[in-house]
Amino acid sequence: MKVALGKFACSGIESQLGGDIPAGARAALLYYAGKLKAGRRLAPFPHFLDDQGAPEAGLSFDLAVDAETEGLLKREAVRQRTTLDQLVAHTVMVYLAELDFLGAAPTRRETPRAL
Image: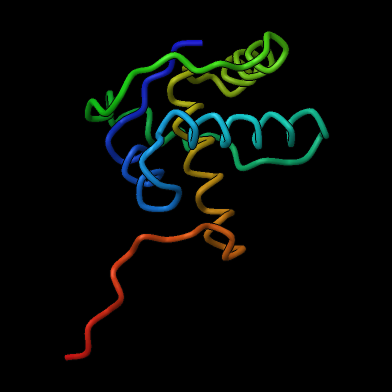
């Protein structure tokens, strides 16, 4: 499936997971889809972002997911009254937030310097 991520989502993947943005996005989508299939409650797409317009261009790429997962994500985008690209960006941010919360993501942040 073809997806586009804005700069913010791309930089989040790079800083938390490394430079392979498509692999990070795929992991996020599969994580989100797995929770949907299991009937778990997920954070809804924040509709206040609807008024923000299109995000700054980041990266567009083809993402290999099975037909069932693609269909599930498309239906979820319709259910949440958003676009597939916005849902994909949302899944990335939810995934990164949960990894950060759990301390599971290797971060590439700089160590704070003493003043």
